[in-house]
Length: 518
Image (tube, rainbow, N blue to C red; front, side, top):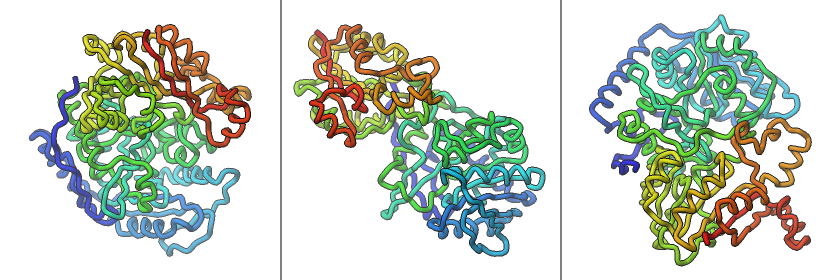
C-alpha cells in the first residue's frame, strides 16, 4: 500500500518572469534535506564568484509574433556578468542592436524544421566558447539558472545533463507546469543523489531550450546524432530540434529536484494556461513523492515496465485523463465497489466517488499515486502481479481499464486475473484505441517506418488492438462483451451513419467496451 499523502505547503512563485527569488514548496522536508539545500545554495553562490564564462546563445525566432519576448530575452542575456554573445536565428531581417548577431535563414519545406539550423552555428564555434545555449524565443533563462546548471554539472556523470522544466502563470496568479501533461511522467526508479543534489528523470525532455558545456557539445557532435537533417520521431519537428542532444546523442536529461526553483523557466506567453499543464500544488506533491522514494519512505514502482515506442507516443496511456460522460454511463447504477486498473490523476475515479462508489486504484506508478490519493482514492502501488496479489481477498462490482490493455504484453492474462476479483455478474468497463483505424491501415500499407512494428509488442510496446483482437482478449478471459461502442471522429460521422453503423472497425478511432463475468 502506498503511504498516505503527507501535508505540505503549496509552492508560491513571486513574479516569475522578473523575480528569481522563488519559494520552493518542498523546503519543509527532512532536516537532512534542508542541510543539503543549504549546501546547494552555498555552492551556487560560490559559482557566481568564478571568472565569467564565454557563452554562445542561439535564439530561434520565426516571424514577428514573438518579438516582444525575444527582446526580453536579449535584455536578460545583456544584463549577465558572463561574456555572452547572442545570435538570433530568424527568417525575417530585424535590428536588435549592435550587440546581437542576426542570422537570416529561409526555411525549406516545413517551417517547423527551421530551428534545426541552430546546430551548425553551435558546432562552428565549438572551440570559441565555454557554454552553449539554444532556446526558443519565448523561454526565459536567467543568470541564476545558468549558475545552477554549472554547479549541478560539476557533480553529474559525463552522460547526464542538468535540464529544465517550464512553467506558466495565469492572470489570477495561479502557477502551472506546462511541461507536465498527457503521458509524460516522473520515473520513480530514477531518483538518485550526486553530491549535494538529488536528481530524477522526467519523460518529457522538451523545455524549449538546453545548455551544453563545450565537452557535452563535442560529445553530442561526435555521436553522429547532433548534426543531422530535420527529422521527427518521438516528438514533432519543433520539439525535436530542442531535444536531439538527449534523444539521440547518448546524453540523458535529468531534473534537479532538490533545488528545483533554479531549474524551472517561465514560458512568457503563458499560452497553455487552462489547456494543458499541472497546477503547482499537485506538481509539488509529486516532487515530494520523489523525495519520499529517495528517503525509502515510498516504493519506487511502475505498473507498466516501459513506455511504448511508436511514433510520437501516440497510443501511450495518459496520466491526466479527463472525466468522460460516455465512460461514466457504462458504470452499472448498482455498483458499490470499483477497481481502477492503471489509475492516473484520478479525475474519473473522483467523479465516481461522488456517486457513492468506493473506489480503489492501482496507479500507473508510485508518483502519480499521490495525485489520486489527494482526491480521496485508496491506492495500491506495485507492479501488476504484486498489486493484484494484495487485492486477492477483495471483490469488486466493476473494474475500469481506460486506454491501457493494448500496452500490456498479454491482455487476456490480465483480464483473467482481474476477472477473479469480480463478483458474480460483475463487469469490466474498458476503452481501447482502434489500431485497425483507416488512417493507421494506410500508414501501414505504405510501410511507414513508425507504423511497421505495430502489433509486435516486443518492438513497439503496443498490441494490435482491433475489434477482432479485443473480442478474443475478453473471450479468453471468460468475460462476455455486452456492449461494443465505436467512437467515430466527426469527419467520418456522415459516412458512418449513411452505412448504418457498418465499417466501424475502420472508421472508429476508439472503442468502449462493457463486458460481464457470467
